[in-house]
Image (cartoon, rainbow, N blue to C red; front, side):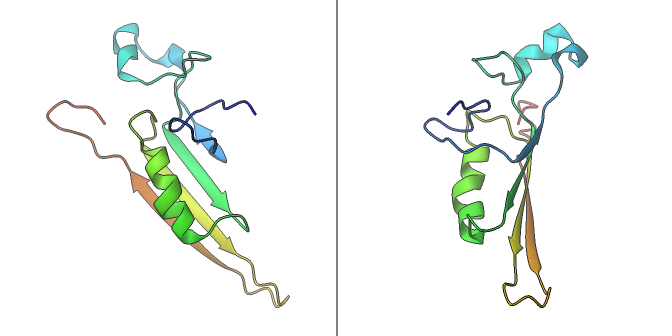
Length: 112
């Protein structure tokens, strides 16, 4: 398995959807402020989404996944998780749960 965007050491989970800034849009003097993937050199995702249908519970999304998305080695600044609760009875009454987590900016260092 190739891990394109490592979130935390030893963690193999990948975001379902992620967005990163393109290097061409960042002035060279600001590049050191953005974490990059050591394998490819691209900027790590800053906005990630995780969508769970059957393989993860709400506690797994919040208690296991969120800490990895916001590990010191990850560059995630905003994460949205969605858990779909499919009603198997066939009546079409499905439910969903969504959560958003943002990385706090440190005003003393002007960094995340």
